[in-house]
Length: 90
Image (cartoon, rainbow, N blue to C red):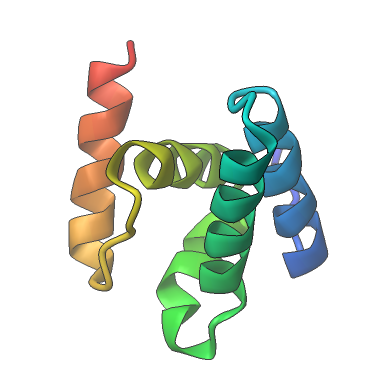
């Protein structure tokens, strides 16, 4: 079985839904959603968008974003952060 890649609108919806169940404060939640979706739409962040097309990796990207509040610009650093986050979250 192969996972279908997410299109940008699906990634944005995922981010909104993901934060909706994790952040109670509406203003904080919306700020986080807006920030991560801005990153996903940014043409200079193609590597992050490519990774985010995979639902599992998008979940990990959202975790990294929530924990660190920023995403690394370099793909290798993002992979490292994703790996660290996955290992520490169980």
